[in-house]
Image (cartoon, rainbow, N blue to C red; front, side, top):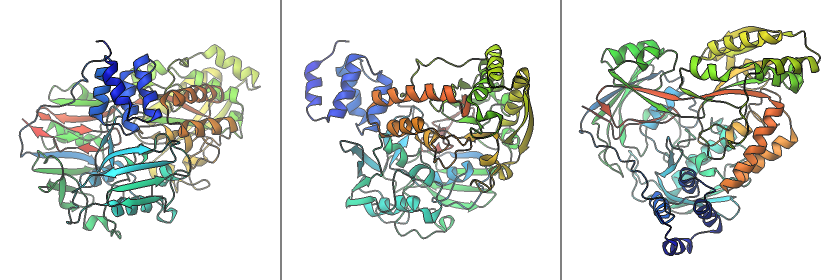
Length: 554
């Protein structure tokens, strides 16, 4: 299709310089259509407007995301892990707990499988010129299940609770250094401003479903969420029994389209195998998250459908950069060169993963610089690096990790691969409680181990991965990695509002981390959700959320 410059000129008249630069990138071919839609949504451009710009730029109509509407009135039955603690939006950190909370409580915007931000409780948002203030316009007429209308004071109170260090919120991993308590400000009943500590080009993701604690609940909330489960969502709590399960009913006063299911039922399981048996036996309709290795039989079951989402979830293999043999970057690079990443993806992960290149920049991110060469197995080069570092005869070391998903098997593969360069790894595989400990330095096997493998869940942007485990002052810097050049590049990336500026910084970060290799990123695994045959309209996210308002059963 040809470009319609008359329409493009009309659209551009009311746009900011930043928005027009993105439009220019689409027209000139510097930005792909996919990246244009994703980054445009981040800047607050509506999806209909992004579609019109794409049409005028000669790309034709955007593909429809609409799905066939199923029959209403079903009861949808879900199997999930047991919530690890009391359900509380401020502190919740486990998949089972956040899944239950998310059924009733909503976010300002939602980060979908395509990483495109879609409006929810906020209708729109936009940054100021340098990305230090973001303004969100709230949806009018949204009611909490308890009856009151959701307004700006509820948003301010909800986010302030998360940003207050005194509350020990899990969301502090997102907000520390970005947003302080008191800097979320009410402009009027339906407008909120976020005044940030520093420029942040990806900030809307910090208050979206990508930050699973950031649900909006009443300003009057004082705790004991399990007594109220108050929210604005398409379902309302019917019954919650700790360690057993929960059920929800359709919210007839919902602000959007009414949910198709009449009820949803959640059954909590302590292990994946009973969930698989329950799905195959017809006791449940959905397994929220199915690990690849445990679910091999289900992957080929004709009575089961598997929803596979590309994600940035991964297993970080950290190595101490300040002591022991891995103090030398050449040794760390040698260990990384031992991994056969193609075998990891095809064998261990059964083709349900993407190769990692030893940085947080997964293939799913538009800002990833794909021109940076992929690291591959090279035993000869690894041996040369070991000799140059003065440890050509090898050494002994302990690899500490957690018993979770495929991590123990991954650890065994690493153990076998590094034998080829003389490294003897003793594996110390702990249950998750013992591995994470108090999750602070000095009281955590995770943060204190000289070498360890840790599971990191999906994020729609790499900001948390870039800061918490890799910056010199990072709260999860298990590698003890301290590099001023890296810190500056990460800060620059996080501040950038422009996609091309982000990509330029990303390329520099990727190359620096290949040189330093404080952490091995071997693969990024797909998020799998299993559904019984005939179940349709289920929308999982790689954050362990499950949107069921369009779910139906044949």
